[in-house]
Amino acid sequence: MAEFWLCAIALFITVSNVINMRVVGLKGAKNIDASVDILVPMRDEEANVEACLKSLLNSEMLNSPQIYALDDGSSDQTGNLISMFKVKKLTGSALPEGWLGKNWACHNLARAGSGEYLVFVDADVRLHPYAIASAITKMNSLKWDYISPYPKQIAESFMEKLIQPLLQWSWIASVPLRIAEKYPNRSMTIANGQFFIVKRTAYEATGGHGAIAAEVLDDLELARALIAKGFKGGVAEGSSVASCRMYQSSTELIDGYTKSLWKAFGGTTGTILALFLLAITGVSPYLSFGAPVVFIFLSRVLSALKTKSNPAYAFLHPVAILVLFYLIVLSSIRKSRGTLQWRGRAIS
Image (tube, rainbow, N blue to C red; front, top):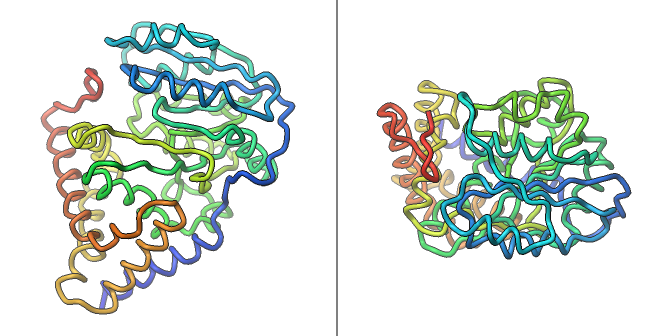
């Protein structure tokens, strides 16, 4: 009975979000007269520098945007490649105690300029020329202080196609977004640092990345910090204006997820509860085929169609959940052993 109602609720929330979700699209973008700083932290990103910066330099409907790219101690040709483009290049400084690398890089990027809007973009993101203008237009129309347009998640390997769609489905099927907007709280905050825009006034009043210096889930924690200070914002569907291929291999995907999944559910108790709920909604229904399977399958298909991913992988939902189980447990084990790292840096 529990699995029936949990799966039914997941489908109900999915349908509600698919209908009511905020969308940053190609229509309705207005010229942005306010100053805009586009901020890109880069560490060992030689494969992404050219495509990323070209897409940012092609941005339209902005008033002389300033693009800042920070080479964060790369061991490859990232720094040299940045120098080939007409952007402001920054060189990362030594990482202070108590800071994680990306947070320190974003902190220094934000301090480098004076734009009224800060646009944080990951190196593996590709933006449509109207992406930033459209996102700021939507943000202003809603009277928000920040917006997190969720990029289309590009998946090429089997492991990516199995796991990446769970990124969006996990919140589309569990967080009623309009309620989260009206009654903001930590547990219902959704954000993605791949493409994140915030007003400088709100960012600085919150303490910016300095307020979340050691947080591995920097995007969620920055959004939560903004909400805690009374600022407004939220997630939006952004697959028409932005795309991202997070990982280039299965090994990189495993390392990427395990570096943060231990923190994703708030601690040991939250992790155990998450594993229980995933079992109820992702594995148990498939052991005795019935209505709950249909509910979850439909929620996966609707989520995929809304976010422009492949709905066919909804058939492999229980397999994806089992792999996610493995990643969550592996992340917790690596955390307990102190062996978490990313791009050559330890994560404590």
